[in-house]
Figure (tube, rainbow, N blue to C red):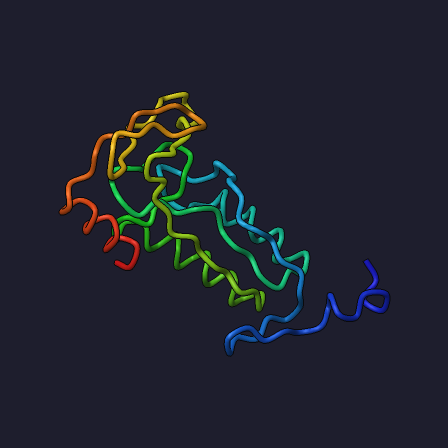
Amino acid sequence: MSHSRFPQLFSPIEIRGQEIKNRVFVPGHNTSLSEGGRIGDAMIAYHEARMKGGVGMIMTEVHCVHPTYMPLGRAWASNDDCLPGLKRLSQKGRDYGVKVIGQVFHPGRVAAASIDGTKMVTYAPSEVPDEMYKTVPTPLTADLIREIVTSHGD
């Protein structure tokens, strides 16, 4: 793609005080490349290929923040064991001048099956099944609601 044909696309942009080197953005999508819930070499190589290609910003796939939802194939951000991979990916972004944004996530009552086909236990404020998977969730206690909300910021 020619920079001269698309000058706006390849020009820097500032978003909330952060300069992004261009407007080429990789949106969040599932790669199923996590290794036991952790970011490992395969996921880093996947994102590094896009960094080498010249993107300005990458949004990672969702990172599950609470033990009530930690399926196989998804990345986790639920404890300190997850930090080394997150730090490595972040450092790769800095090395290439790419902003990397993580998505923290808990699905509530809507949870797809794990990559091994296992149907996940879901949690929600009530036992109303979700429309897509028809799963009846386990009702949350007030304490568990607070815990899940807090886990998004821990």
